[in-house]
Image (cartoon, rainbow, N blue to C red; front, side, top):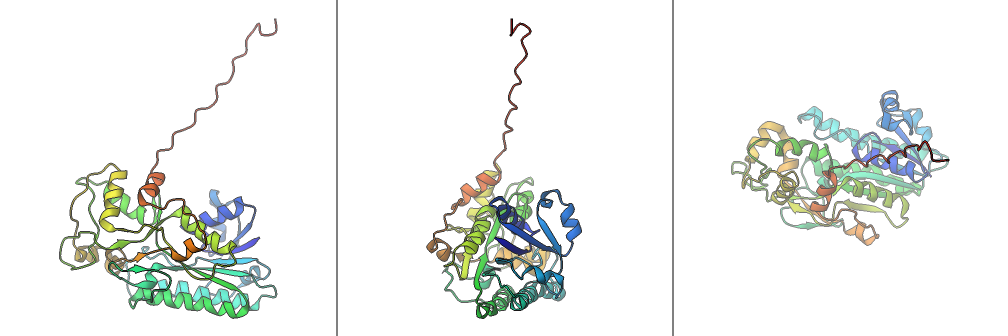
Length: 334
């Protein structure tokens, strides 16, 4: 099948694009910097088209006749310190791109059968220890409102006869990227690892009691592909592993994986707020999200536990020795 893919140069998008190609599908990647993307050695085998998903353009013709659309477009939450301008960029890059994609679908003579739309577990807002499923209500903070608008922008595609699946992605784990790209260097500094954030009083030392709903990069890509392939996949689907952990347990498991000592407490939330700005709340507060829908649809997690996920991510790759070249024997034919 031909799959039109936005956000295909990001962490999740690259994984999905290569898996689509490996199984014989044709991913078509939309990029604002198409020439730069084409020069990327890892992307040379993939088709890339120029365009900005937030504005109309020739790229919209690629949706006409495509079998499916996967929309991952969105400004990186951790790319810049948040202010009003950056928050507008975070919101608009998600909502406006989705609105534009739905308009392109509406204009297509041959419409895609499915739109697999990215969202995030920020939809729920902070919920302490409460277990959250796809039926849980939305929160009221900035990220919750952004996710709600993001999802609402995709719903009009349903009236066009397109199946819409909304993947509420958790904390994606991949070596040197995303959350681990930020946390791994911190855990390797002298003194040892520590919990990050408390989710409670801003001035007390962090004890890491907030929940982290994580997922291995292979599994989040797998859930997107399952939503693409399964006609029963529609509406919100939590993109998280089945065993969320509190931050202190995440820190302890990561420290053990990296052979680092573990400290009992960490810096207070207010210090992280000073260092990171408002985005610190994404780290210091959390949600306990369960992948109820993915499991009911029959998705099998490759890495259901944190220990398994981190072990795979940080596994030392042992080089396979080259096979020995047989030496020619001078008298072999005599």
